[in-house]
Image 1 (cartoon, rainbow, N blue to C red):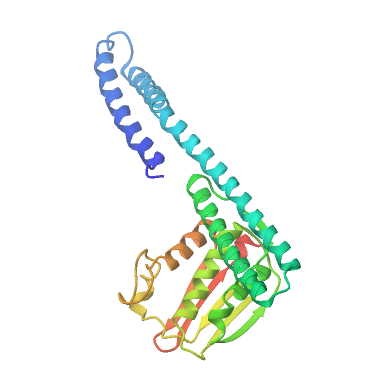
Image 2: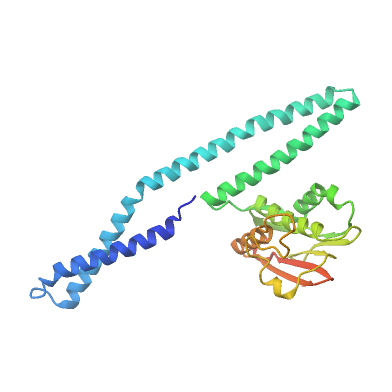
Length: 279
């Protein structure tokens, strides 16, 4: 949101706390003849704590109201975007049934594919916005079905690869869109860095998800850096260097272990330990 309320509250609290202690300590000095020193210090610290707490609490009320207003506006905007998307989808379906010309049918199919991409973007934007405002609620789903769906989405890019798949049903509980984005980043990297005709292996078994390619691999000195945001081994390669950083962030937030085994010239194998999110 641009402002880290937690850190702002932390620093403001301790600043006001120290100022309050100094002021109250000076005032309390005159009561030394009336109360024991330990008791007086305890009372002063308690008053300072209460003073700082209430001052900070009411100082942030306007900011909290603005955040609530922004959250409401974003939720309503996302809800309204659903209406035109659903309308386009319904009309495409009706046109496809009534259309007899092959050329027009192909055009409708292209519109439907573009709509699917728009829906993907909508889900990603919704996920990112909710992620900033509040933690997305976990959903229970079969990871096998989602992975199969994403592999189909990358069908055009995978046509020049030898795909080996071994997927077993696995019920997990995480934010579904976040899981999709994580898998998309890992698979797109495997595709990007694998030569034409090479093999990409995807295995989901025993609570482990493995994505292995036969690409150029990663040097050992770079392995500790690849999860850093904006890091790229080659400055001339496409992209912004944030894909693996997003993967690592999602895994850390959900207790998913992520491990990399890679050697230059021998490809890369990324393993995700999903035990903590299994149902």
